[in-house]
Length: 255
Length: 255
Image (cartoon, rainbow over all chains, first blue to last red; front, top):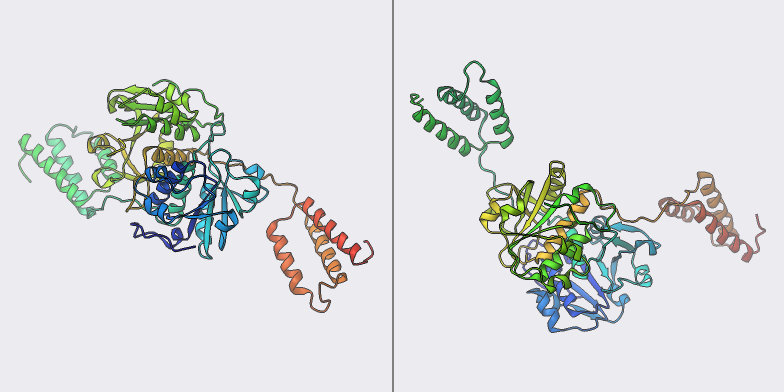
């Protein structure tokens, strides 16, 4: 098997580069294109096609929607054995795990095992035909059967959807599932927060929003709210700015 | 919002029945159909369409591939506010979380939070247009932004693919992610397993497969193998049947 094609996921972990997606006897080239797109969205780039009905094909390119590098690098082979040559583990996707005599895993477990086994070599994810999936003989060739949890009354994930879910689980299992988080700014210190609470108490009393005899409940609620929010310094400054404006409006002398 | 349509997922948890999938200003009816299919595969059935370009439409039915009950029950509304009316939480999907001032979660976290919040009421998952997703204003209307981890160089999940991944995570988060497992038959007792090992030792010695002076290593490996396999009673019987046949072939008197 050749090296994976270059693609733009600079952070692609080594594990994902060792995953082959094997599509067996796919009928519709559009589904091959959609599978290529689903793969590349998750950083997978190695596609192996076993005896596809039509490939290459303009429909595949159209549905790949920009993931043409995956199609261009796809290998077409004659048999499943060819596709699995040299693999440390092959995982067959099936919606009918009862027909498999070996181990069965759900999608998440299978993805974790796939990533772990890339330490030893390539790992193949094997998907059958659109109409009937993998045959029992094809599944028996795999070391593990994987099933995507689904509605038992309507379990017909299409081929690209199944590839999408597995590729997503592989990306998360490979530790590349991080998403962007808002940067944390400097947290307010305890002193700054206590200064805010003192200011709020004085302002709300002066504005006659608080009952001086029984101020506790409201202040406790504010304390709870701001505690949960883990205030940043800048936010304390903004809130004290608002309090200062209330002070002005209420005619309370500036502190 | 009306009750979810009846569908065949008898085991659908209450949480999934409280999830609305909201598609905003979808351009292509085929994508609405594909989203309906993706939803129903995971047991989601409540689809709300905000100002779709074309709906109902034969293309939607074609791509729904049997999930027409979801399309038939879909609600078409004019504004996002209409779609979110009465929700305990709305979660906006975005590939550009940097533009959101509020909390950002990954797909898995968002699904867990969605399921937890169904205890309070409906939860909406909101998906934007095919070309540009949710606008900043639409996203700001949501209480949480969710991002599906993806290849930063090719993050273009199509609409149905994004719905599929989120619906899958929701099903798993709702505790309906169980897949069929091979039934466990009666485990062999320690006595039965020790009987197997004694038999194997005697047979392999008689068959001159074992060196009587140094039998330890091979037997230890067999013990390790069968220990890992957690033998069932029936399997012990099968293995002893094979040993008995070797005994016959080797001319060893039957035990």
